[in-house]
Image (cartoon, rainbow, N blue to C red; front, side):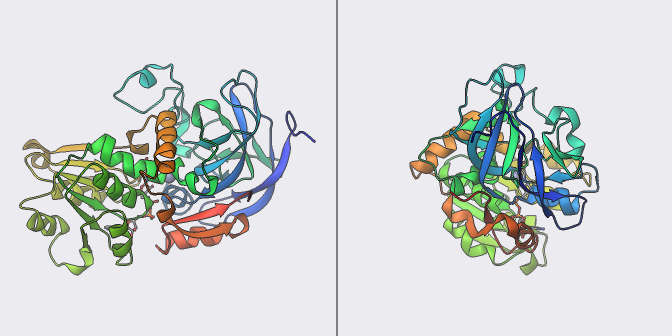
Length: 378
Ligand code: NAD
Ligand code: ZN
C-alpha cells in the first residue's frame, strides 16, 4: 500500500534534552510539502558534530531533536513541484544546500546557498521548519536533516541523486565527514604537489584530509593526534609521520617547525579546539603557510597575534570541504565507485538503530572512526 501523501509513523532516535542518551521513539513524519522529498533512510553514521550538539555545546537550545546528518536513503515520495527526484531514487542528503539559482550558488567563490536553513536559525542547529512530531510535540530536524530516523523530509536543494550502483551503507559517509576533510585539503587549502602538510585530529574528517593531501600530491603529511591508536589508521590514508603532542614537552608547532625547516606549507585543524586552531596556524610556515579551520565549536574565541599572519600566512575556514553540495556529493560518489577515494576504510563498526547510544559512546571515547548505523537494512 502506497504511503505517499500520508503521515508515516516510524522509529527515530529522539534527543529530548542535552547530555542524555537518545531514546528510540515512534514519531510521525508528515508528507513532503512543495519542493520537498520524503526519504527512507537506509544507513547513517555519527559525526562529531552530532556529539557536539548533544553533549558539548553551551547553547542548549535546539531540543527535542533527531540528530544525524551523515546518511543515505531512498526517495519514498515527493512533494509538489519536485521534478529532479522520483520514488526509488538513491539519494544522499546534505547539511548545506545548492539551489543553483541564488548569487552564492552562481559564484565559484563559495559553497554556501542563500536558501539554506543555516541562514535562518543556526544557533539551534535546525531550520524553523520541521515535518516531525512525537507525543504531540514538534521535534527539530537537526541541521535540516535528521538521519537517525527511518524516514525524514528534506528540501530538494539539500538532496543529491546518486548512482544506483552505490552501496548506501558505505556512501552515507560522503554526506559529511569524508567530503569535509578531503575537500578542505583539495578545495580550500589547495594543497600542492611536493608540499608538506600537517593534519590535526584524526577522526573521519582528519583522515579524509590526510587522504586529500595525498591525492593532491603532498610529499610529506604529518598526522597529529593525542590518541596513539590513530597512528596506524593515518598511514592507511597516506600519512608519512605521526606526532602525538603528549609525547613532547615543547609546543607542537615547535616540534613541527623542527621537522620541516620552519613549518609546513599547509595545515588543517580537524578537532574543533581553539588551542589546536592556533597551533595549526603556527605550525604553518610564516612566509606562505596556509592553515584551514575545519573543526567546529561556538564555545570560545580563538586568539592569535597579528604577527602570526602579517608575514604571509593565510588563515581560512572550510565548511563541507568547500564542495558545492550536489556537485560535490555526486562527484565523490563517482570517485568512490571508480576507486579513486577510499570510503570503506573509515568504517570500524556496524550497528542497528537500537544501538545508537553505543555508537555515540564509541565516538565520545575515541574508539571508532565511523560506525555505520543500519537504520532500514536492505
Ligand atoms: P572525531 O571525534 O572522530 O575526531 C577528532 C579527533 O581529534 C580525535 O581523533 C581526537 O583524538 C583528536 N583530538 C582531540 N584533541 C586533540 C588535540 N588537542 N590535538 C590533536 N588531536 C586531538 O571527530 P570528526 O567526526 O572527525 O570531526 C572533527 C571535527 O570536525 C569536529 O569538530 C566536527 O564538529 C567538525 N566538522 C566540521 C565540518 C565542517 O563542515 N567544517 C563537518 C563535519 C565535522
Ligand atoms: Zn558532520
